[in-house]
Image (cartoon, rainbow, N blue to C red; front, top):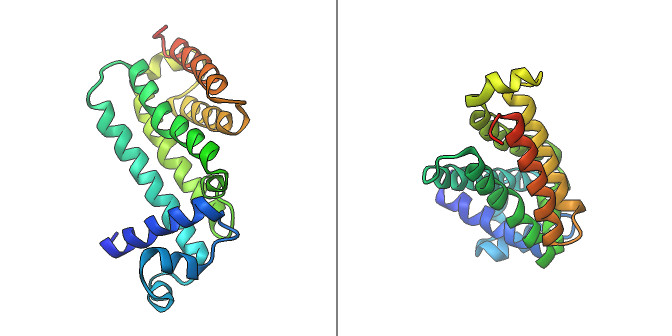
Length: 187
């Protein structure tokens, strides 16, 4: 991805966060990026392409940040804490401050569902890799690393939208983490 693409997609993320995907226009994105609409259309044919690119950029950054932070800790529990903080809590707090930003995170608009699925696969793959070290323990419970990764990710993601407040979210995530660690033979 080029520097110009990063500039455009960062601008789009800002616009989508303020106005929501549906209300944002290509003109809004171009103005935020400091480029002409013609330049924007030369790179992205429509808002759906920008949504897909923005979601991919967000996912790439989350996965990068998680991997970098994981390098400094050793336990699965610590790694789960990092994942939950960077992939779940950060976005919960953002949507409380900027409610329209949830449009982008849930894949609203043209191209959104496919982009959301790709984003989910990246994060689930990250977790499946973490859980693969305990594949034998998971097999004892009739599960695979991929099964647990999907369950963990989908559960934690749903909590972003159902938790009443940050304290409630943290309690839900703590329960999920404890349950996951038991399945992995860690708790």
